[in-house]
Image 1 (tube, rainbow, N blue to C red):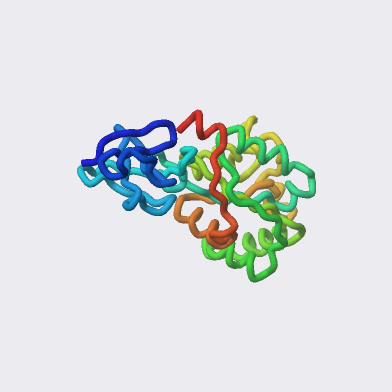
Image 2 (cartoon, one colour; image 1 turned 90 degrees about the vertical axis):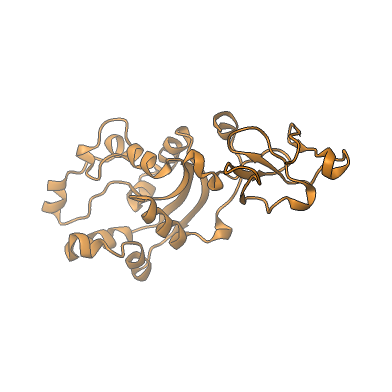
Length: 237
């Protein structure tokens, strides 16, 4: 069993390093007392490991203690996709909408602006026609191609549910005040049906964890998602 020495972000192990500072990367537990790996046994930054003597999970940290939140399942951290639809972009609401997510301690780890073509729209809404019919798919697809969208990958504790709570119900007239749709979008289901137009509700968000995984991977490569620590993380985790 390795001795427990942990000074700030510097790991020391007298038994294996002769009192010298250990490797640049150290291991610290998600919970429980500190456990430090030797310089030769430190795993790759961002990986999850287990103590040799317990089932406690550990996450790799760097010298300044930045946790790789996406590898911390014990605190419920996950990633989800959000699209600011063409109406949000055209109305100049992007900054105000993004601020709602950041105010709720959701971290932006990926962002891009994109025109959705026919093929990509079908990939994104791959099951919409099957679930709700051709008319709904066609009006939604046509609307999403009227202008650019802004895509975000958001990371945080319980991110999928939290984002959907922040944006409000699909139909804006049913979304309570204080939600994005309740404050900024006002179309009703009836008006959409009468006009034959898509629901203009500003934002798309992944509906569940499986959907979030599919959508994040569709929109963003690994090299387009970034690891960094916010001040809020230092205080909250």
